Image (cartoon, rainbow over all chains, first blue to last red; front, side):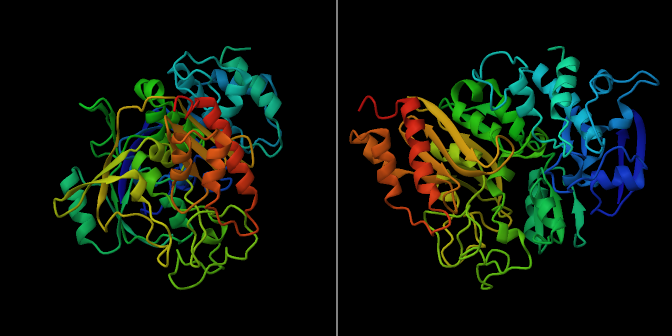
Length: 167
Length: 317
């Protein structure tokens, strides 16, 4: 069935089997291989993309449900040659080893920083009615949906602190 | 995934009619559980009625001083709402202790209530499961899996309900509003919404075929403290092996039964002046552990007592 959405600022139209997940549509139909398929069950976060500015697992979302949505993948974060600040911070802090989880980590970070800026609490926020302060504990809790099997977590944490202006 | 057809009706009436008219049709909301189970062919709908964009995503004040959470509000949206954070912290904490940021951005209030168990044998399609195939048997009984029920289990099923949010809603005495294709509207109490397994563990709630949850209504917050605490096998992003919600004098337990477990014996003991530990001991007297899950007795006693001590439940009685 036919579906149209905005992908990284450009109009995209597809004719898809309704079974196609957003992740498979991005990778197999649109050729954007940045978003990764790790577990394909919403457990690892490697497929994280932004839909209307919010982070989701693309592997658990049917592509046909995204009519008219604005979708941003890792390929859409940089402005021409200028990296997104989160991408730049990951480079500076060497926040990866094999790199497979990195696109998901970066998209998740962009979404997470927006959530924190919007004042969303997390489980480790002691006062649910106070402003959010992005401590290391807060960052770890908010990023728990992204696994890194190389365990580059200390560098990922450092990169997020830099990108979030909390270093 | 088995083939299915997909449709996104523009209004509630059409959505209800489609679900009633098409055999094998299912409502699709956030999809974080349903799509996953469709990949495993545990769920095999023939037709998906996408209700995620229906105008059911508002959080409204009720005249009674409570809140009405539209069925399609996301878990993130409810947990971030200033009214929920200020007046129903047990609910915000429960939601924030579940899943990940990505999943909470998609998962809905109604979908959270209707998610299926995470029992390992429900997911293992090479093993018998009375939920997947009524009458097939239960591999979890006698199997090597410890996150099973200590209350209300049956010879057909020992699975637990996986939701954190539902445990808080049970302690808060929430109500569930529904509509069906016949134009009928119902209001169901949260405490009776989910069923014990009995000999029909595949029937998990009181919801009828083609009936849709349209809202969850929170009564005014009860006097007294609120808290949600959860024990799990890693620090974040894992299902509970035991959880406790306290709202005033009301107590509910998670990951111990086929439904969020209202701890009525503990509540009664508190009213009669019992200490937190005594109240939890009174509740756990009714537990029937199976050898693998005996740890839950001590875990729930301590977790519950810690929560009741923190909120001071029963102090003024």
